[in-house]
Image (cartoon, rainbow, N blue to C red; front, side):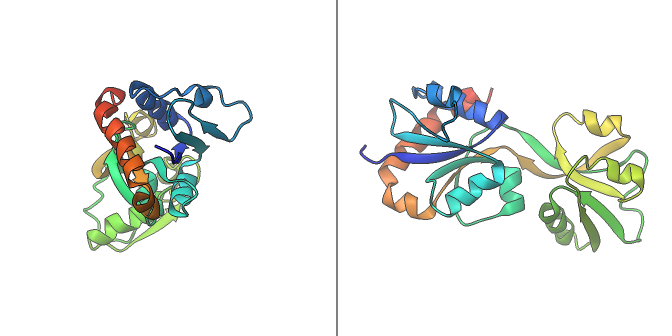
Amino acid sequence: MSNRLRIALTKGRLQDKSVELFERAGMDCTPIRHPGRRLIHALPNYPLDAVLSKAPDVITYVEHGVCDLGIVGKDTILEKGGSFYEVMDLGFGKCRFALAVPEGQDFYASYKNRTIASKYPNVASRFFAAKGMDVEVIKIEGSVELAPILGLADAIVDIVETGATLKANGLVPIETVAPISARLIVNTASMKLYKNEILDFIEKCEKYRGEAAK
């Protein structure tokens, strides 16, 4: 393989699980584990360069073709959208979007206009539009659980893993909005230009993704 691929990795837990996957596939990820001040990290034994990014930037880099591939959570894909191929569910980083309400509240019993707080307004808006419900969605940048406590919102749409934070703030999840996990995405032009190289990489991920998801 003569062409080096470039992949954008979401910093944090998805980065750690991605590196674990690559290492299981026999790739030397020392440059990623010890990045120093470098911004692009070349794997020494496989034609792949890694860029560590915030989740929304992963999509931006792949969509604009400065990275051929990216690993990003489905939550970011659902909220941000974009033009690229979503080629694989990697099976790690599992959680879900959920609708949560104050404990004891019958959310669907009332006919009044409801207000929903979320860090993911596009996800929340599409969810209620599909139900034919007219709601006001307020974007929150910080702890979205505060919105119902302060009386700003009737409910929230947020990422839920264990539900402990919700419970601690008197909230309960009542409906799953969408499942979430890490996804491998590919730039549309790169898939044509570097088809063999990308398919080789996808094959390696496919072979070992089950082990990395544990």
